[in-house]
Image (cartoon, rainbow, N blue to C red):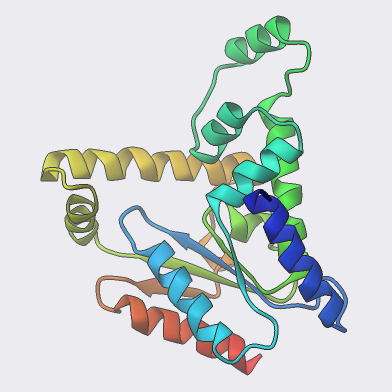
Amino acid sequence: MNSVFVEYLRRMQIVAGDEALSEGDLPFITISRETGCHSWNIARMVQQQLNRQAKIKWQLVTKEILADASREMHLNPAQVKGIIAGEKRSHLSEILHSIENHTYLSDSVVRKKLAEFIESAALRGHVIIVGRAGAIITARIPKGLHVRIVAPLDWRINSIMTQQNIGRKEAQQWIIETDEKRRRLLEDFSGRSMNELIFDMVLNNATLGDEEIAGMIAGIIQKR
């Protein structure tokens, strides 16, 4: 059975074979979000709306694809998962891992390989990248639409309480910790703090429904 990554590459090859434009001239979308916002639901709605009329089908770059891609690149799945989650390790931990395992790659090398994969996906076009520092990694590619989804803390707490079936205090703590991990992830990939100006659209999930946001994103792409 083909892996998710192999199936993704197969679909991308079909896209590349059907498209006359060169890499970098093709549209793609990145979606960044605050914890608790409905990024994946919105991304799937955008994909569905675009694919109703699109000759070239849009793909989601999912965590399953990244996990499979990591194995193809001979990366440690646990290390990749930790990096994507924004977990921070000390320099001492890095040194100990490198001593214990001669094939060990530093976090910076793994980040570079992941960034290269995400950038390659954007260059192929017709992909939606949710999170994973997508906007920063692909900032130099001209045809991207970079979207940031935000909402007030209280709204996000209620959202997490519903999604995870946990109490308010737990939900708030989850949001604080996850937002911090994502901030670190962005800084690790870019070497600088996130600047809202890298986004073309900043949308409030508390006042705009998922379908409204998806429609706005799809509408802009369809006019390009």
